[in-house]
Image (cartoon, rainbow, N blue to C red; front, side):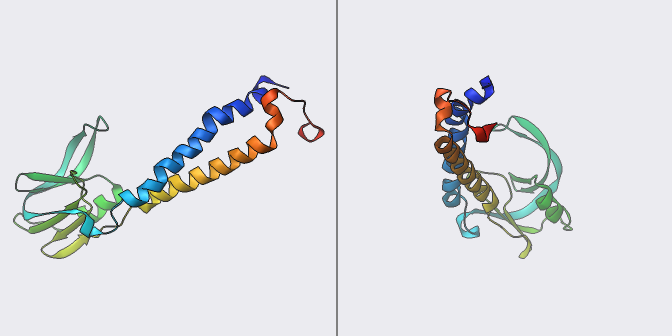
Length: 165
């Protein structure tokens, strides 16, 4: 029996199973943390003072990226996701337009945008992230528990059965 096969059980216990459980721990709470609708977002309202592309430095991610920004008075709001940028950039803005921007709490990323009471971008909750982590966690946890039960003899370096050859 190779060393890789002999240590498989330990790797599943120390790496695989914690990964699956970690995905579940991250994914399930995301369903509650993601705002369900625009009423749970924070609305910022005012008149457009400037707009366009700019470079934005994120302290959280420690990176700089090119974003589309909308400035209302002294507050600046950004979008950097390609899909959202295409929607927001395509509108013909004029300085002085009435703007309503919705963001997550303490954030500057645009989640919903109205210009002159016309909806430009509607908020869609990003549940795909919660589903991805939850389903990945379920999949890995079930598969690894199945492995732990079926191949328990690998923990003690048991002999290969005829099926394994």
